[in-house]
Amino acid sequence: MLHILQGAQMLFVAFGALVLVPLLTGLDPNVALFGAGAGTLLFQLITKRQVPIFLASSFAFIAPIIVGVQNWGIPATMGGLMAAGLVYICLGGLIKVRGVAIIHRLLPPVVVGPVIMVIGLGLAPVAVNMALGKTGDGAVQLIDGSIAMFIAAASLLTTIAVSVFAKGFFKLIPIMAGIIVGYSMSLFFGVVDFTPVQQAAWLAMPAFTLPEFNLSAVLFMIPVAIAPAVEHVGDMLAISNVTGKDYIKKPGLHRTIAGDGVATIAASMVGAPPNTTYSEVTGAVMLTKAFNPVIMTYTAITAITLAFVGKLGALLQTIPVPVMGGIMILLFGSIATVGLNTLIKNQVDLNAPRNLVIVAITLVFGIGGMALGIGEHSLEGVSLCGIVAILLNLVLPKDLGDTSKHS
Image 1 (cartoon, one colour):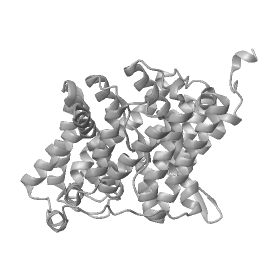
Image 2: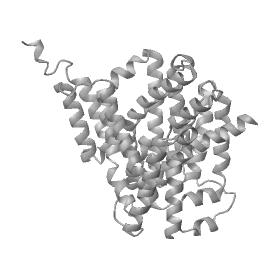
Image 3: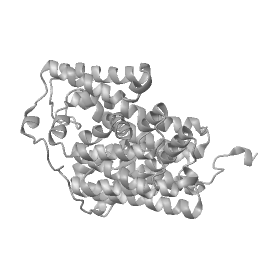
Image 4: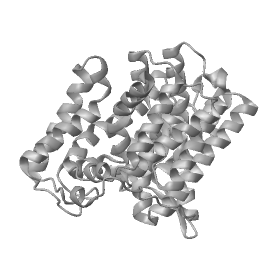
């Protein structure tokens, strides 16, 4: 019984971030809950139930999913995300054959840092538009601008206050706190429409969407897997430090990254966002000392159970755009900062011409929306800049611009 309660508590920690991704990308939150639960169970199967971690909606894929849904629709986007999951499995095979060092050779900080920055900064206009009460693309004003700003500010300031000043368990739920306060403000201003909740059934089958395969969507999504794959290594090191066990060795990084891939493929098969290991849950594990992986099994079962509560999904979809916009301002800025910190922490010298070239081109291609067409297919944004960053790193000589060699 204790494990069941601890499992439910872990889901509460992850809940805000888990449902934020489908709400931002136009996917169904109930399907996302089902995908997260099923993905976690598959991850446990592949890693022999040794790692106390929960998998749920990945922030790194928010921008690509928004672009994908606009260009090709949800089924084709899901097909592309299945291909991204396949990249994880291939990386797992590569790690098994060549060791962990191959990841650092292919994806050093000078490549990963700017790609993560692009993922965050590329979404900046969407966050601002939603905070102003508009749709993500800014085309339609959904809520009066001055009221929207007030609601967005309340959400943003609450999220900041909780993440900075809260202690213990509350420090782990800043997004949840921001949503609750923003939603309360929205109720006060009367901008919440409860019609969908009244119409929804208590128990309902989640609105599963089967994937379709479109080469453009697949080519677009595959390179996006770069940043989360490297982030996965960091997450595994973090949970290893928390529990005092080396999960990189046992069950092995090749198993955990393949588990991430299988979880992402499974989620995409039903119309849910890709899954990734959740650092909020790692924080909760550290705080509660709940090191038993069985707890995460119950977290997954709780998520799957909630997926069939129709009124819950309908209630989540009543959250007004400025509530999410306010939180997104901090969220996307934080993603960009993680990329910047990757460069700083690994002491990437941006005075070195080689590093400067890689970072500069990656940032401008990614944020500027550079697109390269191959026939009717084109690569743009995060996908293009990810490939360009990897190629530049492999092609440019290590001593490019190193004047000490010639003096």
